[in-house]
Amino acid sequence: MRGPMLWSDAARGLVVVALCVIAGCGRSPQQQTGPMQPGEDGSTAEQPDAASGSDGSGPGERDRSMALPDGLVASPMRTAGPITVDPETSKACPEGMVLVSGEYCPFVGHRCVDFIDEKADRCAKYVPPPLCEGKMERRRFCVDRYEYPNLAGVKPAVMMSWIEAFGACRAEGKRLCLSTEWTMACEGAERLPYPYGYTRDKKVCNIDRPRPAPEPDMDAFSIPRKTGREVARLDLRITSGALEGCVSPFGVQDMTGNVDEWVINEQHFDKVLKEGEKPPFVSGLKGGYWGPIRARCRPITPSHNEWFRFYQVGFRCCSDAQDAPDGVAERYLKKLGNYLRKTGAPSSPAP
Image (cartoon, rainbow, N blue to C red; front, side):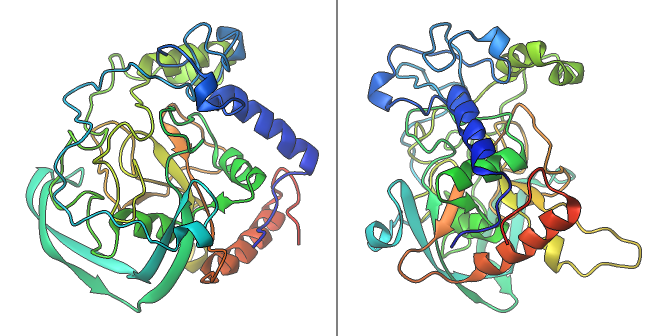
């Protein structure tokens, strides 16, 4: 299913070139050698050879020697049920993606019995079973196993706007995930609060790490030659797949923590608005980054527009199942195309 376009082919090509500089996607993992250090994203002046990593930069670089920080464990005990990659993945999904198939519950409640910070909605322990309300919906779609650029042993790209993420997925013949698709891929058939179970564990996923002091210099993000240095100072990403326990029941890695992930927020189209109320942005963020945040499967951050970029914001891609797509994304992509035409997106979407 081809969704709405944001750019012409030429412009989309420029985006791919730019992303390959940012994420190191122009070479195979075998070609990337040597230990890498956290990259200086967003400033080509600050990183003369970001793709090759000659100065140790580039957020898509492979890091074969990085020790896991802050008590993270590569292979911890999972508190959830077994990880089951659907055997139909190979025929239903492109390489590097996994199949998510089953019933999606629109409203799920979890009971927290041990809050870390109730005001910030951070919970140490939930108890089963989850409460499900609303009409169940059959879903069947594919999702990238790792955060973009979807390569094990490579740090996910950051400083990406929703528009850039949309275009990058389109360039690969995929699309941004719907928020509900992302949620289902994270929580599994049991509708877990965390992809690994009911008990929060910062050894399992890259979460609950304090940001380096001082707080982010917001002025640096408006000055390109300073952006890379500030991103590198704040950067606490780890390489995709390094945490074997940070995986959902469907086999999707790093869905909570590491980087925030852009999604299409269906509530922009579905929310019943009060008089004078504006709809939420069509762009949403899921999963949270490495800091002390909710880092759960269900929550979404809908407060940033499509042009927002920040040091911890990345994405992953989804696609329709090749054998029996559920048709849900098609409905929303049509609505999204109308929205983008109406609002004057950077380039006219295809009809």
